[in-house]
Amino acid sequence: MSAPERNGTILELSDVVKHFGGIAAVAGAELDVRRGSITALIGPNGAGKTTLFNIVSGFYKPERGVISFRGERIDRKPPHAIAKRGLVRTFQITKALTKMSVLENMMLAAPDQPGEQLWRLVVTPRSARAREREVHQKAHEVLKLVRLDRLADDYAGTLSGGQRKLLEFGRALMRDPTMIMLDEPMAGVNPSLGLELLDHMKRLQDERGTTFLLIEHDMEVVMNVSERVIVMNEGRVISAGPPDEVRNDQAVIDAYLGTGRGSGESTRPTEETPPGEGETA
Amino acid sequence: MSGLANVQFWAFVGVVAGIYTIFALGLQLQFGFTGLLNFGHVAFMAIGAYTMAILVVKVEWPLWLSALVAIAVSMLFGLIIGLPTVRLRADYLAITTIAFGEIIRFIAVNQQTLTGGPQGTINLTGAGRASSYNREWLDFQAWAQDQLEVILGDHATRDVTMLVLVWIVAIVLIILLQFMVHSPWGRVLRSVREDEDATSALGKNVFSYKLQSLAVGAAIGAIAGLFFAFQFSFFSPQDFDPLTTFFAYVIVLLGGTAKNWGVPVGALIFAFIFAGTRFLDFWPLSEITSADRAFLRLIVVGLILIGLMAFRPQGIFGKKEEMVLE
Image (cartoon, rainbow over all chains, first blue to last red; front, top):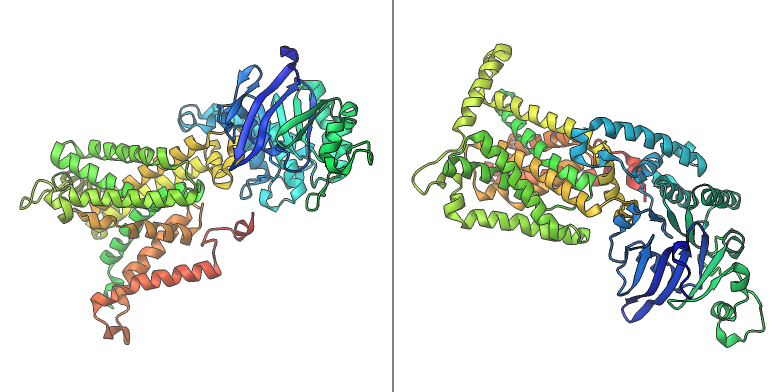
Protein backbone atom coordinates (compact mmCIF):
# COMPACT_ATOMS: atom_id res chain seq x y z
CA MET A 1 0.00 0.00 0.00
CA SER A 2 1.25 3.46 -0.74
CA ALA A 3 1.97 5.71 2.20
CA PRO A 4 -1.04 7.81 3.19
CA GLU A 5 -0.93 11.28 4.71
CA ARG A 6 1.06 11.23 7.89
CA ASN A 7 -1.33 12.92 10.26
CA GLY A 8 -4.02 10.39 9.50
CA THR A 9 -1.87 7.40 10.39
CA ILE A 10 -1.53 6.20 13.97
CA LEU A 11 0.30 2.93 13.36
CA GLU A 12 2.59 2.31 10.46
CA LEU A 13 4.54 -0.82 9.61
CA SER A 14 7.03 -1.07 6.82
CA ASP A 15 8.95 -4.11 5.63
CA VAL A 16 8.52 -6.06 8.88
CA VAL A 17 10.16 -9.48 8.81
CA LYS A 18 10.13 -12.29 11.37
CA HIS A 19 11.27 -15.88 10.91
CA PHE A 20 10.66 -18.94 13.02
CA GLY A 21 13.27 -21.44 12.06
CA GLY A 22 13.18 -21.47 8.26
CA ILE A 23 9.64 -20.19 8.02
CA ALA A 24 8.94 -16.54 7.41
CA ALA A 25 5.92 -15.94 9.65
CA VAL A 26 5.92 -12.31 8.66
CA ALA A 27 7.69 -11.62 5.39
CA GLY A 28 7.93 -7.90 4.76
CA ALA A 29 4.53 -6.76 5.96
CA GLU A 30 3.53 -3.19 5.14
CA LEU A 31 0.44 -1.67 6.61
CA ASP A 32 -0.96 1.42 8.21
CA VAL A 33 -3.85 1.97 10.58
CA ARG A 34 -5.71 5.25 10.46
CA ARG A 35 -6.23 7.26 13.58
CA GLY A 36 -9.67 6.75 15.07
CA SER A 37 -10.61 3.91 12.75
CA ILE A 38 -11.87 0.41 13.36
CA THR A 39 -9.70 -1.77 11.18
CA ALA A 40 -9.97 -5.51 10.73
CA LEU A 41 -6.96 -7.73 10.10
CA ILE A 42 -8.03 -10.92 8.35
CA GLY A 43 -6.43 -13.80 6.56
CA PRO A 44 -6.32 -17.58 6.55
CA ASN A 45 -4.75 -19.48 9.43
CA GLY A 46 -1.00 -19.16 9.42
CA ALA A 47 -1.13 -15.88 7.54
CA GLY A 48 0.94 -14.23 10.28
CA LYS A 49 -1.75 -12.10 11.91
CA THR A 50 -1.04 -13.05 15.51
CA THR A 51 2.71 -12.95 14.91
CA LEU A 52 2.25 -9.45 13.60
CA PHE A 53 0.35 -8.52 16.77
CA ASN A 54 3.15 -9.97 18.86
CA ILE A 55 5.70 -7.93 16.94
CA VAL A 56 3.77 -4.67 17.15
CA SER A 57 3.13 -5.11 20.88
CA GLY A 58 6.82 -5.78 21.52
CA PHE A 59 6.65 -9.46 22.43
CA TYR A 60 8.69 -10.47 19.36
CA LYS A 61 11.59 -8.47 18.05
CA PRO A 62 11.34 -8.11 14.27
CA GLU A 63 14.48 -8.97 12.31
CA ARG A 64 13.87 -6.07 10.01
CA GLY A 65 11.44 -3.27 9.49
CA VAL A 66 10.16 -0.12 11.08
CA ILE A 67 7.08 0.21 13.25
CA SER A 68 5.93 3.62 14.34
CA PHE A 69 3.09 4.46 16.63
CA ARG A 70 1.96 8.08 16.90
CA GLY A 71 5.00 9.07 14.89
CA GLU A 72 7.42 7.38 17.26
CA ARG A 73 9.40 4.21 16.56
CA ILE A 74 8.38 1.36 18.81
CA ASP A 75 10.03 -1.62 17.12
CA ARG A 76 12.82 -1.83 19.69
CA LYS A 77 10.65 -1.13 22.73
CA PRO A 78 9.63 -3.72 25.32
CA PRO A 79 5.92 -4.61 25.68
CA HIS A 80 5.33 -2.60 28.83
CA ALA A 81 6.78 0.53 27.27
CA ILE A 82 4.51 0.14 24.25
CA ALA A 83 1.48 -0.34 26.51
CA LYS A 84 2.48 2.80 28.40
CA ARG A 85 2.45 4.76 25.15
CA GLY A 86 -1.21 3.95 24.80
CA LEU A 87 -1.13 0.89 22.53
CA VAL A 88 -2.75 -2.02 24.34
CA ARG A 89 -3.36 -5.53 23.06
CA THR A 90 -5.37 -8.59 24.08
CA PHE A 91 -4.43 -12.20 23.50
CA GLN A 92 -6.01 -14.81 21.27
CA ILE A 93 -5.51 -17.41 23.97
CA THR A 94 -6.67 -15.42 26.95
CA LYS A 95 -4.32 -14.69 29.79
CA ALA A 96 -6.46 -14.32 32.87
CA LEU A 97 -4.59 -13.86 36.15
CA THR A 98 -6.38 -16.89 37.50
CA LYS A 99 -5.55 -16.76 41.20
CA MET A 100 -6.51 -13.13 41.46
CA SER A 101 -10.06 -11.85 41.61
CA VAL A 102 -11.81 -10.46 38.55
CA LEU A 103 -11.73 -7.05 40.24
CA GLU A 104 -7.99 -7.32 40.89
CA ASN A 105 -7.44 -8.24 37.24
CA MET A 106 -9.13 -4.97 36.33
CA MET A 107 -7.39 -2.85 38.93
CA LEU A 108 -3.97 -4.16 38.00
CA ALA A 109 -4.41 -2.85 34.46
CA ALA A 110 -4.94 0.76 35.54
CA PRO A 111 -2.11 3.13 34.60
CA ASP A 112 -0.45 5.76 36.80
CA GLN A 113 -0.79 4.03 40.15
CA PRO A 114 2.04 5.52 42.27
CA GLY A 115 1.56 2.69 44.78
CA GLU A 116 3.11 0.32 42.28
CA GLN A 117 6.47 1.71 43.30
CA LEU A 118 7.74 0.70 46.74
CA TRP A 119 9.36 4.01 47.60
CA ARG A 120 6.25 5.99 46.73
CA LEU A 121 4.19 3.59 48.81
CA VAL A 122 6.32 4.70 51.75
CA VAL A 123 6.80 8.37 50.87
CA THR A 124 3.37 9.24 49.44
CA PRO A 125 0.96 6.61 50.74
CA ARG A 126 -1.97 9.01 50.40
CA SER A 127 -1.65 9.50 46.68
CA ALA A 128 -1.48 5.72 46.28
CA ARG A 129 -4.66 5.30 48.32
CA ALA A 130 -6.47 8.10 46.50
CA ARG A 131 -5.55 6.61 43.13
CA GLU A 132 -6.62 3.19 44.40
CA ARG A 133 -10.11 4.54 45.12
CA GLU A 134 -10.38 5.99 41.61
CA VAL A 135 -9.15 2.75 40.09
CA HIS A 136 -11.61 0.76 42.16
CA GLN A 137 -14.47 2.94 40.96
CA LYS A 138 -13.36 2.71 37.35
CA ALA A 139 -12.90 -1.06 37.59
CA HIS A 140 -16.52 -1.45 38.67
CA GLU A 141 -17.71 0.71 35.79
CA VAL A 142 -15.77 -1.30 33.24
CA LEU A 143 -16.93 -4.58 34.78
CA LYS A 144 -20.53 -3.43 34.40
CA LEU A 145 -19.83 -2.61 30.80
CA VAL A 146 -18.52 -6.09 30.01
CA ARG A 147 -21.22 -7.67 32.20
CA LEU A 148 -18.80 -9.19 34.69
CA ASP A 149 -19.76 -7.02 37.65
CA ARG A 150 -21.48 -9.86 39.46
CA LEU A 151 -18.31 -11.91 39.29
CA ALA A 152 -16.06 -9.12 40.60
CA ASP A 153 -14.97 -11.06 43.69
CA ASP A 154 -14.62 -14.45 42.03
CA TYR A 155 -11.27 -15.83 41.00
CA ALA A 156 -10.60 -15.00 37.35
CA GLY A 157 -9.71 -18.68 36.98
CA THR A 158 -13.36 -19.62 37.43
CA LEU A 159 -14.44 -17.65 34.33
CA SER A 160 -15.46 -19.39 31.12
CA GLY A 161 -13.59 -18.92 27.88
CA GLY A 162 -15.98 -16.25 26.65
CA GLN A 163 -15.93 -14.44 29.98
CA ARG A 164 -12.14 -14.38 29.86
CA LYS A 165 -12.32 -12.65 26.46
CA LEU A 166 -14.51 -10.03 28.11
CA LEU A 167 -12.09 -9.77 31.01
CA GLU A 168 -9.23 -9.08 28.61
CA PHE A 169 -11.26 -6.48 26.76
CA GLY A 170 -12.14 -4.87 30.08
CA ARG A 171 -8.53 -4.86 31.22
CA ALA A 172 -7.51 -3.13 28.00
CA LEU A 173 -10.22 -0.50 28.55
CA MET A 174 -8.91 0.14 32.06
CA ARG A 175 -5.84 1.74 30.53
CA ASP A 176 -7.80 4.33 28.53
CA PRO A 177 -5.71 3.42 25.50
CA THR A 178 -5.25 5.43 22.34
CA MET A 179 -5.35 2.24 20.35
CA ILE A 180 -6.46 -1.32 21.14
CA MET A 181 -5.41 -4.42 19.26
CA LEU A 182 -7.90 -7.22 19.80
CA ASP A 183 -6.99 -10.78 18.85
CA GLU A 184 -10.26 -12.56 18.09
CA PRO A 185 -12.30 -10.68 20.67
CA MET A 186 -15.55 -12.38 19.73
CA ALA A 187 -14.41 -16.00 19.90
CA GLY A 188 -16.55 -17.74 22.50
CA VAL A 189 -18.48 -14.63 23.46
CA ASN A 190 -22.24 -15.03 23.18
CA PRO A 191 -23.57 -13.25 20.08
CA SER A 192 -25.80 -10.67 21.77
CA LEU A 193 -23.02 -9.63 24.13
CA GLY A 194 -20.66 -9.59 21.17
CA LEU A 195 -22.94 -7.06 19.48
CA GLU A 196 -22.95 -4.95 22.63
CA LEU A 197 -19.17 -4.97 22.64
CA LEU A 198 -19.13 -3.85 19.03
CA ASP A 199 -21.49 -1.03 19.95
CA HIS A 200 -19.20 -0.09 22.75
CA MET A 201 -16.20 -0.09 20.46
CA LYS A 202 -18.05 2.27 18.14
CA ARG A 203 -18.97 4.51 21.05
CA LEU A 204 -15.35 4.70 22.23
CA GLN A 205 -14.35 5.46 18.66
CA ASP A 206 -16.89 8.30 18.46
CA GLU A 207 -16.38 9.78 21.90
CA ARG A 208 -12.67 9.38 22.46
CA GLY A 209 -11.33 8.69 19.01
CA THR A 210 -9.98 5.33 20.14
CA THR A 211 -8.44 3.31 17.31
CA PHE A 212 -9.17 -0.41 17.01
CA LEU A 213 -7.31 -3.07 15.12
CA LEU A 214 -8.90 -6.48 15.39
CA ILE A 215 -8.13 -9.92 14.16
CA GLU A 216 -11.49 -11.53 13.47
CA HIS A 217 -12.65 -14.59 11.60
CA ASP A 218 -16.34 -13.77 11.65
CA MET A 219 -16.84 -12.07 8.29
CA GLU A 220 -20.18 -10.61 9.31
CA VAL A 221 -18.51 -8.77 12.16
CA VAL A 222 -15.64 -7.74 9.93
CA MET A 223 -17.87 -6.39 7.19
CA ASN A 224 -20.25 -4.60 9.55
CA VAL A 225 -17.98 -2.95 12.02
CA SER A 226 -14.77 -2.11 10.23
CA GLU A 227 -14.22 0.80 7.91
CA ARG A 228 -11.08 -0.79 6.60
CA VAL A 229 -9.97 -4.34 6.14
CA ILE A 230 -6.37 -5.47 5.85
CA VAL A 231 -5.83 -8.95 4.44
CA MET A 232 -2.71 -10.97 5.15
CA ASN A 233 -1.51 -14.16 3.56
CA GLU A 234 1.80 -15.96 3.97
CA GLY A 235 3.29 -13.18 6.03
CA ARG A 236 2.42 -10.35 3.66
CA VAL A 237 -0.36 -7.84 3.32
CA ILE A 238 -2.10 -8.74 0.09
CA SER A 239 -4.97 -6.29 0.15
CA ALA A 240 -6.28 -3.34 2.13
CA GLY A 241 -9.25 -1.10 1.72
CA PRO A 242 -12.94 -0.69 2.48
CA PRO A 243 -14.75 -4.01 3.16
CA ASP A 244 -16.65 -4.03 -0.12
CA GLU A 245 -13.54 -3.47 -2.15
CA VAL A 246 -11.55 -6.12 -0.32
CA ARG A 247 -14.21 -8.79 -0.56
CA ASN A 248 -14.12 -8.58 -4.32
CA ASP A 249 -10.36 -8.51 -4.57
CA GLN A 250 -9.22 -11.52 -6.58
CA ALA A 251 -6.03 -11.91 -4.52
CA VAL A 252 -8.12 -12.21 -1.37
CA ILE A 253 -10.46 -14.74 -2.88
CA ASP A 254 -7.50 -16.78 -4.04
CA ALA A 255 -5.90 -16.64 -0.61
CA TYR A 256 -9.00 -17.94 1.08
CA LEU A 257 -10.02 -20.53 -1.46
CA GLY A 258 -6.63 -21.50 -2.79
CA THR A 259 -5.50 -20.56 -6.29
CA GLY A 260 -5.63 -24.14 -7.57
CA ARG A 261 -9.39 -24.41 -7.34
CA GLY A 262 -10.08 -21.74 -9.93
CA SER A 263 -11.82 -18.47 -9.25
CA GLY A 264 -15.26 -18.95 -10.64
CA GLU A 265 -16.79 -20.84 -7.72
CA SER A 266 -17.37 -18.01 -5.32
CA THR A 267 -17.25 -14.26 -5.56
CA ARG A 268 -16.77 -13.53 -1.89
CA PRO A 269 -14.60 -14.91 0.88
CA THR A 270 -16.47 -17.43 2.98
CA GLU A 271 -16.37 -17.56 6.74
CA GLU A 272 -13.07 -19.06 7.50
CA THR A 273 -13.80 -21.31 10.43
CA PRO A 274 -11.68 -24.42 10.54
CA PRO A 275 -12.44 -27.13 13.14
CA GLY A 276 -11.54 -26.18 16.69
CA GLU A 277 -11.84 -22.50 16.04
CA GLY A 278 -15.43 -22.45 14.96
CA GLU A 279 -16.90 -20.48 17.83
CA THR A 280 -17.67 -17.44 15.79
CA ALA A 281 -21.00 -15.82 16.40
CA MET B 1 11.31 -37.98 78.46
CA SER B 2 12.40 -35.25 80.87
CA GLY B 3 13.29 -32.92 77.99
CA LEU B 4 9.66 -32.59 76.99
CA ALA B 5 8.89 -30.39 80.00
CA ASN B 6 12.05 -28.36 79.75
CA VAL B 7 11.19 -24.69 79.11
CA GLN B 8 14.71 -23.89 77.99
CA PHE B 9 14.63 -26.60 75.40
CA TRP B 10 11.37 -25.45 73.93
CA ALA B 11 12.49 -21.84 74.04
CA PHE B 12 15.43 -22.94 71.91
CA VAL B 13 13.08 -24.71 69.50
CA GLY B 14 11.00 -21.54 69.36
CA VAL B 15 14.06 -19.45 68.52
CA VAL B 16 14.98 -21.78 65.67
CA ALA B 17 11.38 -21.63 64.46
CA GLY B 18 11.54 -17.82 64.59
CA ILE B 19 14.75 -17.69 62.57
CA TYR B 20 13.28 -20.09 60.02
CA THR B 21 10.12 -17.99 59.91
CA ILE B 22 12.11 -14.92 58.92
CA PHE B 23 14.18 -16.92 56.46
CA ALA B 24 11.12 -18.48 54.80
CA LEU B 25 9.29 -15.12 54.65
CA GLY B 26 11.88 -13.94 52.14
CA LEU B 27 11.25 -17.04 50.06
CA GLN B 28 7.49 -16.61 50.41
CA LEU B 29 7.78 -13.19 48.77
CA GLN B 30 9.98 -14.48 45.94
CA PHE B 31 8.40 -17.85 45.33
CA GLY B 32 4.93 -17.63 46.88
CA PHE B 33 3.99 -14.18 45.63
CA THR B 34 6.21 -13.60 42.60
CA GLY B 35 6.62 -17.15 41.35
CA LEU B 36 10.43 -17.01 41.30
CA LEU B 37 11.89 -20.46 41.81
CA ASN B 38 14.83 -19.41 43.95
CA PHE B 39 16.68 -22.52 45.09
CA GLY B 40 19.64 -20.59 46.43
CA HIS B 41 17.89 -18.60 49.12
CA VAL B 42 20.35 -19.85 51.76
CA ALA B 43 23.03 -17.75 50.07
CA PHE B 44 21.33 -14.56 51.25
CA MET B 45 21.34 -15.90 54.81
CA ALA B 46 25.04 -16.71 54.47
CA ILE B 47 25.88 -13.33 52.96
CA GLY B 48 24.02 -11.54 55.75
CA ALA B 49 25.72 -13.50 58.52
CA TYR B 50 29.23 -13.43 57.03
CA THR B 51 29.18 -9.78 56.02
CA MET B 52 28.13 -8.76 59.52
CA ALA B 53 30.73 -10.98 61.22
CA ILE B 54 33.55 -9.88 58.92
CA LEU B 55 32.75 -6.18 59.32
CA VAL B 56 32.60 -6.43 63.09
CA VAL B 57 35.72 -8.56 63.55
CA LYS B 58 37.99 -7.32 60.77
CA VAL B 59 36.87 -3.77 60.09
CA GLU B 60 35.77 -3.21 63.68
CA TRP B 61 32.59 -1.44 62.74
CA PRO B 62 29.82 -1.22 65.30
CA LEU B 63 27.43 -4.15 65.19
CA TRP B 64 24.31 -2.24 64.14
CA LEU B 65 26.11 -0.59 61.24
CA SER B 66 27.61 -3.91 60.16
CA ALA B 67 24.18 -5.51 60.32
CA LEU B 68 22.61 -2.79 58.14
CA VAL B 69 25.44 -3.01 55.63
CA ALA B 70 25.09 -6.82 55.64
CA ILE B 71 21.42 -6.48 54.67
CA ALA B 72 22.33 -4.01 51.92
CA VAL B 73 25.07 -6.30 50.59
CA SER B 74 22.63 -9.19 50.49
CA MET B 75 20.17 -7.06 48.51
CA LEU B 76 22.96 -6.14 46.14
CA PHE B 77 23.70 -9.82 45.58
CA GLY B 78 19.98 -10.34 44.98
CA LEU B 79 20.23 -7.80 42.15
CA ILE B 80 23.50 -9.25 40.83
CA ILE B 81 22.12 -12.78 40.63
CA GLY B 82 18.82 -11.43 39.29
CA LEU B 83 20.11 -9.26 36.45
CA PRO B 84 21.29 -12.09 34.21
CA THR B 85 18.91 -14.83 35.38
CA VAL B 86 15.50 -13.32 36.01
CA ARG B 87 14.79 -13.15 32.29
CA LEU B 88 15.29 -16.90 32.09
CA ARG B 89 12.48 -19.41 32.20
CA ALA B 90 11.50 -20.61 35.67
CA ASP B 91 13.44 -23.88 35.51
CA TYR B 92 16.64 -22.20 34.36
CA LEU B 93 16.32 -19.69 37.15
CA ALA B 94 16.04 -22.59 39.60
CA ILE B 95 19.26 -24.16 38.30
CA THR B 96 21.27 -20.96 38.34
CA THR B 97 20.14 -20.07 41.85
CA ILE B 98 21.21 -23.50 43.16
CA ALA B 99 24.62 -22.80 41.64
CA PHE B 100 24.67 -19.34 43.18
CA GLY B 101 23.97 -20.78 46.64
CA GLU B 102 26.74 -23.30 46.28
CA ILE B 103 29.20 -20.73 44.92
CA ILE B 104 28.67 -18.57 48.00
CA ARG B 105 29.20 -21.59 50.26
CA PHE B 106 32.35 -22.65 48.46
CA ILE B 107 33.72 -19.14 48.67
CA ALA B 108 33.10 -19.28 52.43
CA VAL B 109 34.98 -22.59 52.60
CA ASN B 110 37.93 -21.60 50.45
CA GLN B 111 38.56 -17.92 51.09
CA GLN B 112 39.99 -18.65 54.51
CA THR B 113 41.53 -15.27 55.12
CA LEU B 114 38.20 -13.59 54.47
CA THR B 115 35.75 -16.00 56.09
CA GLY B 116 37.71 -18.23 58.45
CA GLY B 117 37.31 -21.18 56.11
CA PRO B 118 35.72 -24.51 56.98
CA GLN B 119 36.20 -23.99 60.72
CA GLY B 120 33.92 -21.01 60.52
CA THR B 121 33.93 -17.58 62.05
CA ILE B 122 35.91 -18.64 65.08
CA ASN B 123 38.94 -18.49 62.78
CA LEU B 124 38.10 -15.07 61.36
CA THR B 125 41.29 -13.52 62.69
CA GLY B 126 43.37 -16.62 62.07
CA ALA B 127 43.63 -20.05 63.68
CA GLY B 128 44.16 -20.25 67.40
CA ARG B 129 42.76 -16.79 68.14
CA ALA B 130 39.08 -17.34 68.79
CA SER B 131 37.26 -14.30 67.53
CA SER B 132 33.70 -13.30 68.26
CA TYR B 133 31.46 -10.79 66.59
CA ASN B 134 28.55 -10.70 68.95
CA ARG B 135 29.77 -8.93 72.08
CA GLU B 136 27.55 -5.92 71.38
CA TRP B 137 24.62 -8.21 70.72
CA LEU B 138 25.11 -10.03 74.02
CA ASP B 139 25.13 -6.66 75.81
CA PHE B 140 21.89 -5.75 74.11
CA GLN B 141 20.40 -9.14 74.87
CA ALA B 142 21.37 -8.78 78.55
CA TRP B 143 19.67 -5.40 78.63
CA ALA B 144 16.56 -6.87 77.00
CA GLN B 145 16.66 -9.71 79.50
CA ASP B 146 16.63 -7.20 82.36
CA GLN B 147 13.54 -5.58 80.88
CA LEU B 148 11.84 -8.95 80.46
CA GLU B 149 12.54 -9.93 84.08
CA VAL B 150 10.10 -7.26 85.15
CA ILE B 151 7.33 -9.22 83.43
CA LEU B 152 8.54 -12.82 83.41
CA GLY B 153 10.69 -12.98 86.54
CA ASP B 154 12.97 -16.00 86.63
CA HIS B 155 11.67 -17.32 83.33
CA ALA B 156 13.45 -14.51 81.49
CA THR B 157 16.53 -16.51 80.60
CA ARG B 158 18.88 -15.91 77.71
CA ASP B 159 16.95 -18.25 75.45
CA VAL B 160 13.55 -16.83 76.38
CA THR B 161 14.87 -13.32 75.71
CA MET B 162 16.11 -14.39 72.30
CA LEU B 163 12.74 -16.04 71.68
CA VAL B 164 10.94 -12.78 72.34
CA LEU B 165 13.35 -10.71 70.22
CA VAL B 166 13.28 -13.04 67.22
CA TRP B 167 9.52 -13.29 67.22
CA ILE B 168 9.05 -9.52 67.56
CA VAL B 169 11.10 -9.11 64.39
CA ALA B 170 9.31 -12.01 62.68
CA ILE B 171 5.86 -10.61 63.42
CA VAL B 172 6.81 -7.07 62.41
CA LEU B 173 8.09 -8.48 59.12
CA ILE B 174 4.91 -10.47 58.57
CA ILE B 175 2.76 -7.39 59.13
CA LEU B 176 4.99 -5.35 56.83
CA LEU B 177 4.88 -8.02 54.12
CA GLN B 178 1.14 -8.36 54.44
CA PHE B 179 0.86 -4.63 53.79
CA MET B 180 3.28 -4.88 50.85
CA VAL B 181 1.68 -7.81 49.05
CA HIS B 182 -1.77 -6.25 49.35
CA SER B 183 -0.57 -2.90 48.05
CA PRO B 184 -0.65 -2.05 44.34
CA TRP B 185 3.03 -3.06 44.30
CA GLY B 186 2.18 -6.51 45.61
CA ARG B 187 -0.64 -6.79 43.12
CA VAL B 188 1.90 -6.46 40.32
CA LEU B 189 4.08 -9.16 41.92
CA ARG B 190 1.15 -11.55 42.13
CA SER B 191 0.25 -10.79 38.55
CA VAL B 192 3.83 -11.56 37.46
CA ARG B 193 3.42 -14.92 39.17
CA GLU B 194 0.16 -15.54 37.30
CA ASP B 195 1.23 -14.48 33.82
CA GLU B 196 4.26 -12.45 32.80
CA ASP B 197 3.01 -11.68 29.32
CA ALA B 198 -0.35 -10.40 30.50
CA THR B 199 1.43 -8.24 33.09
CA SER B 200 3.79 -6.65 30.61
CA ALA B 201 0.96 -6.20 28.10
CA LEU B 202 -0.69 -4.08 30.79
CA GLY B 203 2.27 -1.74 31.03
CA LYS B 204 4.19 -3.23 33.97
CA ASN B 205 7.93 -3.78 33.78
CA VAL B 206 8.04 -7.45 34.76
CA PHE B 207 11.84 -7.57 34.87
CA SER B 208 12.03 -4.72 37.36
CA TYR B 209 9.41 -6.25 39.64
CA LYS B 210 11.17 -9.60 39.68
CA LEU B 211 14.40 -7.89 40.64
CA GLN B 212 12.66 -5.96 43.40
CA SER B 213 11.10 -9.13 44.75
CA LEU B 214 14.46 -10.87 44.68
CA ALA B 215 16.19 -7.97 46.45
CA VAL B 216 13.57 -7.56 49.18
CA GLY B 217 13.53 -11.33 49.73
CA ALA B 218 17.32 -11.26 49.92
CA ALA B 219 17.19 -8.55 52.59
CA ILE B 220 14.80 -10.66 54.66
CA GLY B 221 17.03 -13.72 54.18
CA ALA B 222 19.95 -11.62 55.45
CA ILE B 223 17.99 -10.66 58.58
CA ALA B 224 17.47 -14.37 59.25
CA GLY B 225 21.23 -14.81 58.80
CA LEU B 226 21.91 -12.11 61.40
CA PHE B 227 19.72 -13.79 63.99
CA PHE B 228 21.26 -17.13 63.13
CA ALA B 229 24.67 -15.63 63.83
CA PHE B 230 23.53 -14.02 67.09
CA GLN B 231 21.92 -17.19 68.36
CA PHE B 232 24.81 -19.54 67.69
CA SER B 233 27.76 -17.22 68.47
CA PHE B 234 29.75 -18.73 65.63
CA PHE B 235 28.93 -20.41 62.35
CA SER B 236 30.64 -22.18 59.50
CA PRO B 237 29.93 -22.73 55.78
CA GLN B 238 28.18 -26.05 56.41
CA ASP B 239 25.38 -24.20 58.17
CA PHE B 240 24.40 -22.88 54.74
CA ASP B 241 24.07 -26.04 52.69
CA PRO B 242 21.31 -26.38 50.05
CA LEU B 243 19.21 -28.37 52.51
CA THR B 244 18.48 -25.13 54.37
CA THR B 245 16.75 -23.68 51.31
CA PHE B 246 14.82 -26.92 50.96
CA PHE B 247 13.64 -26.56 54.58
CA ALA B 248 12.37 -23.07 53.78
CA TYR B 249 10.37 -24.53 50.88
CA VAL B 250 8.93 -27.16 53.23
CA ILE B 251 7.86 -24.38 55.59
CA VAL B 252 6.30 -22.31 52.80
CA LEU B 253 4.41 -25.29 51.39
CA LEU B 254 3.38 -26.48 54.84
CA GLY B 255 1.94 -23.10 55.80
CA GLY B 256 0.47 -22.39 52.38
CA THR B 257 1.98 -20.75 49.29
CA ALA B 258 1.35 -17.00 49.16
CA LYS B 259 0.09 -16.95 52.75
CA ASN B 260 2.36 -14.88 55.01
CA TRP B 261 0.69 -16.05 58.20
CA GLY B 262 1.20 -19.63 57.09
CA VAL B 263 4.97 -19.17 57.37
CA PRO B 264 5.25 -19.00 61.20
CA VAL B 265 2.86 -21.92 61.54
CA GLY B 266 4.84 -23.97 59.04
CA ALA B 267 8.09 -22.99 60.75
CA LEU B 268 6.79 -23.98 64.20
CA ILE B 269 5.60 -27.37 62.97
CA PHE B 270 8.89 -27.86 61.18
CA ALA B 271 11.03 -26.90 64.18
CA PHE B 272 9.02 -29.09 66.56
CA ILE B 273 9.34 -32.11 64.27
CA PHE B 274 13.00 -31.40 63.86
CA ALA B 275 13.74 -31.12 67.58
CA GLY B 276 11.08 -33.62 68.54
CA THR B 277 12.70 -36.66 66.96
CA ARG B 278 15.01 -36.81 69.97
CA PHE B 279 12.02 -37.93 72.02
CA LEU B 280 11.52 -40.96 69.83
CA ASP B 281 13.62 -42.98 72.28
CA PHE B 282 11.13 -45.78 72.91
CA TRP B 283 11.39 -49.34 71.61
CA PRO B 284 11.97 -50.30 68.83
CA LEU B 285 13.60 -46.99 67.97
CA SER B 286 15.72 -47.26 71.09
CA GLU B 287 17.59 -50.06 69.32
CA ILE B 288 19.15 -47.41 67.10
CA THR B 289 21.84 -45.18 68.56
CA SER B 290 20.72 -41.64 69.32
CA ALA B 291 23.07 -40.25 66.69
CA ASP B 292 21.44 -42.43 64.05
CA ARG B 293 18.02 -41.48 65.32
CA ALA B 294 18.77 -37.86 64.41
CA PHE B 295 18.31 -38.87 60.80
CA LEU B 296 14.75 -39.83 61.58
CA ARG B 297 13.88 -36.14 61.45
CA LEU B 298 14.56 -36.04 57.74
CA ILE B 299 12.40 -39.11 57.23
CA VAL B 300 9.59 -37.57 59.26
CA VAL B 301 9.85 -34.27 57.39
CA GLY B 302 9.76 -36.18 54.12
CA LEU B 303 6.73 -38.19 55.17
CA ILE B 304 4.87 -35.08 56.26
CA LEU B 305 5.63 -33.43 52.95
CA ILE B 306 4.31 -36.46 51.07
CA GLY B 307 1.21 -36.53 53.27
CA LEU B 308 0.69 -32.83 52.70
CA MET B 309 0.91 -33.14 48.93
CA ALA B 310 -1.53 -36.04 49.01
CA PHE B 311 -4.13 -34.70 51.42
CA ARG B 312 -3.71 -30.95 51.64
CA PRO B 313 -1.65 -29.73 48.70
CA GLN B 314 -2.64 -26.13 49.36
CA GLY B 315 -0.91 -26.13 52.77
CA ILE B 316 -2.47 -25.33 56.11
CA PHE B 317 -3.54 -21.78 55.28
CA GLY B 318 -3.96 -22.20 51.54
CA LYS B 319 -7.28 -22.29 49.76
CA LYS B 320 -8.20 -25.44 47.96
CA GLU B 321 -10.02 -23.55 45.19
CA GLU B 322 -6.78 -21.89 44.17
CA MET B 323 -5.14 -25.21 43.44
CA VAL B 324 -7.49 -26.06 40.60
CA LEU B 325 -7.53 -22.69 38.82
CA GLU B 326 -5.87 -22.51 35.46
